[in-house]
Image (cartoon, rainbow, N blue to C red; front, side):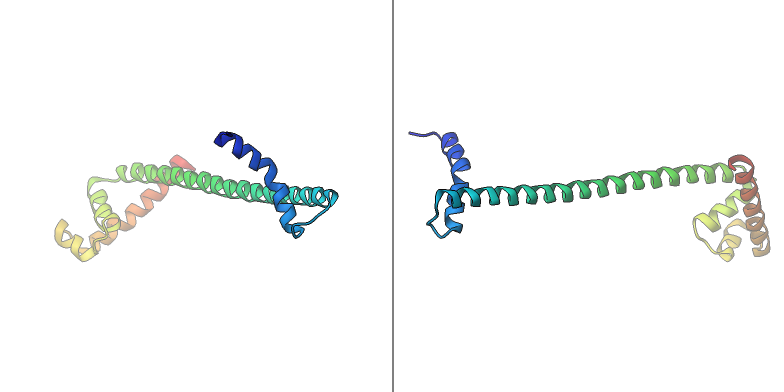
Length: 142
């Protein structure tokens, strides 16, 4: 009695012959059968090569996306670190005003009420803060 492994090996080698006979309508000369087997093996080979190429291309695309994504994350972190350092260089009142309005998104009117200063002063703080941040970045990172 044959084991499952032996049966599997037998089918692996005998299956191409069965396939060739089916394609030839069940009756074929040995030469026709061997030609059909060879033709099927060539087709199978090229199908596998095409499949492998598609898989390699897909892996390559995903790898490029991952590298690009990690580069973007690193760049964003570096930019965030630079911005944090620049904001830390502002005076306490300008820093508080800038963070409240530009990072937390509050209006100048709301900031004016909370901080107890006029909207004109808020505007002046924001304008000066942007100038100082720009000069800080240019001086330290460019």
